[in-house]
Length: 408
Ligand SMILES: Cc1ncc(COP(=O)(O)O)c(C=O)c1O
Image (cartoon, rainbow, N blue to C red):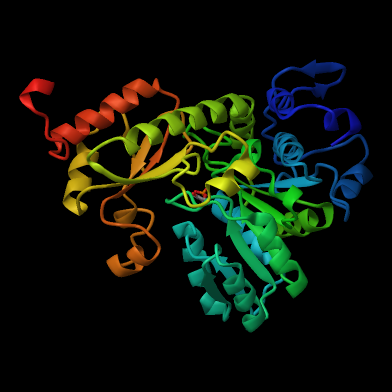
């Protein structure tokens, strides 16, 4: 980030995402898509320089491509970082971030127990390299300290909000537990986005994103990012170059296009989610609502301190009933779209026991607070009153809400 950019607000940086790419003396106001795989120069030695250890130039698009680099610069500026490295998916970004810490056979990663299922799947695969994962309750700092000390772990892996219960860890406190014990911290900031929370400012070593969610925001991109200081980003970039999980220029362009409206979208996602969370709390067919903006949420105070007065678009609730009731309710929705992703323009719903957390049995689900009536919701940009009406009619049609003749 240059000095001028440092003085600009988040909204301004986002709105200017990708503006200013040049051909000759022409400066474009929309980012340019450069599909080149190969770059050439007036003299052949410039190609050799571009391939050099600094890797700053463009020679071959698996190493670097102008449109992808433009996205990387935008995301680095939004996270307050030196550099970002763009990947073909969030999972590719997470795998490279872990690899960048030279984790090897015999090592143990300490991770929050409410982790995204795909990341759990990656950690399970690492078992075949004799890399273990110890899952801990990240809301119990003593337990985290003990796990790090007992395992001699060099890596603590966190998420800024857990899935699906949207719990919010005290990231700075966790960094202060990890650092003296020699462990680095990687944090997945997908749910919060840098608009709500900038983990590097709390001492986290590397931030990872599934840009497929709120960053790109329109349900039409699979992309990932790793963000951090120059030396760590360099290590991540080198891994990407050899593993080849690079983002395509078209996807980078779409992600930049999405980022240009990120602040507005996050504001609206957050306002609507808070409104719906409050509304759900008042419904007789709802047992409990999980949303960090509600005073009833266990980490409301932490969320308020770290996120301010916007708490993001993700919420979960437990309806009064079991699996059959939840499935009937989901099938009765007309505006909410059942789907496995989140962070899109349209509101999405998902049933964690059979989707994101299907690897866990009922007892394991219960231990992490997910019941058979738990539903996850990614609140989109529709009129919130339409969303409330949809939830109400689904509750009626599925038999959760008994309507008296007088109410009809
Ligand atoms: C929190 C979180 N991290 C990472 C991922 C993986 O991202 P991708 O699907 O882009 O690989 C997801 C996907 O749902 C996610 O929800």
